[in-house]
Image (cartoon, rainbow, N blue to C red; front, side, top):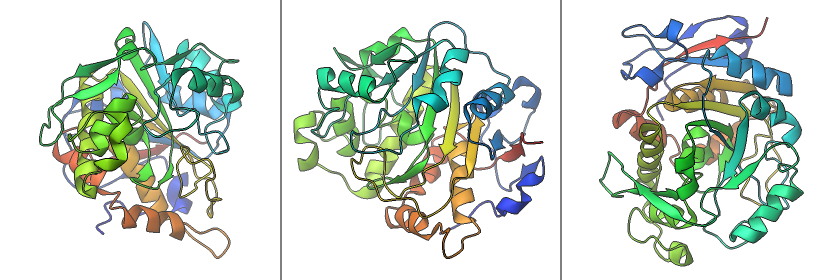
Amino acid sequence: MKIYHIFTLAALSCMLFTSCGNTAKSASSCAAASDCKENSKPVVYMTKEITAESLVKIYKALGVVPKGKVAVKISTGEPGGHNFLQPSLIEGLVKSVNGTIVECNTAYTGPRYETESHMKVFEEHGFTAIAPVDLLDGYGEVRIPVKDTTYIKYNLVGENLLKYDWIVNLAHFKGHAMGGFGGVLKNQSIGIASANGKAYIHSAGAIAEKEHIWKHTAEQDKFIECMAAAAQSVHDYFDGRIIYINVMNNLSVDCDCDSSPADPEMKDVGILASMDPVALDQACVDLVFNYPSTQDDNAGALIERINSRHGIHILEHAHKIGLGSREYELRSIDK
């Protein structure tokens, strides 16, 4: 496994880190207008504080103010699980952007499979108490174009996505049983796909019916490349009008879609944000792979989960198709 950015958490007290390699040229690669220079690396901001206040602070560090109707894409979390981002943590950010909390139905059976029961999860997990909520595919779905048509020929998303002018992609970074890890790229691909769209991605374009999702699972790398293509589809549709944030807490090897996730074996790391989704997820992966593990605070299980699923391939492919850069500058906003 090739590691692109080597540093330790102790070094994060410095305000600026640079990585090596080639940078994808994209207007959305820059974290703020003042950072956008030709050949510059996208900026990833970081704070080690995980509070409602620091979440708003890191959003403001990006120097971007969403206008119009703003969707805040989260995971509502599978009932029984407890690692999903809590309403008390995200409320300030959601209100700062006057946002609507959005999610899509799952392709696997359970409380979030049907619209009516999923809306109850929104309420039971406390999200309806802090903001308006919207199930994007609650009553329909729509196709949007993809650039990388190697496997999927379109992206099938909830039709309500088209109502929004901006997205705040607010992801809980953690492991994932199928993808290896889940960050903003997964939150924007599988996360924004309709239930049928999820089946389309998982099957690498073979089927688009959620009822048959487990009968047509694709080879692992094909599935991962389809996630990257779908994430790019949403990014391109919004023409860069997406803010990307990863919260690195409750770092289980399992996703929030798991009703009984494994307990984290490493401590919380912080919150990171960027306008480049590839740079952001890469920075989080680098923090995991270079974590100063001890016997009682160990990143080994999460690293094994990522490696065993070839999770790094979503970064490789997303960079290859031009979604973003695997190189970045990491800037601490902590004093």
